[in-house]
Image 1 (tube, helix red, strand yellow):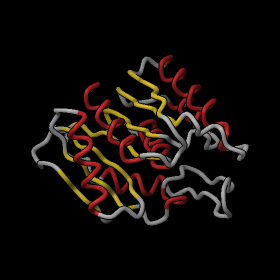
Image 2 (cartoon, helix red, strand yellow):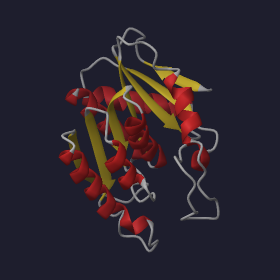
Image 3 (cartoon, helix red, strand yellow):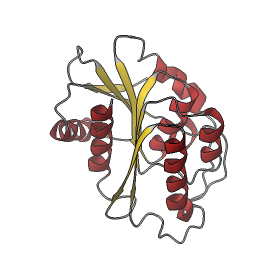
Length: 208
């Protein structure tokens, strides 16, 4: 399991983020952005994902863009991530962008290890997510959700449901008495993902 880690090892808050083909410079830039948004001391641990559509998908689902279907590798990937969360004196926050944001929401319903969830522009359109959260309940104490204001304005019929779905998830988490916020950013899904992710992690740390 390949990881990049930034921040003091003594920090009591540990941010866990699955990442794709990021270079170390890009991760360091995100770390510095988070530091701009909060004064809390933290350690950022990013975990390289080998197969994005497989490792971050809780269950199999048909492709919605391109030809690659979604796998069901999230359970195995979560087991690997939990190996990084063994110190009970620390608070762990799971988060990420796009499909990694979906994984974070699912993982925090699957286990109570994570105190918070930073889901920046998550793939809320993913079939079955809303039902899973409803049936299993969010175990994290603080959840940040965000979306670009143009993300639901797409010709892809499945992905166009993302706005409706994320509003439903926000209402559901409020019903479950979770400290939750939903922030709307300007632009489409590909606009400033590092900034959006940094804001997500910072908000959760302040909310813990």
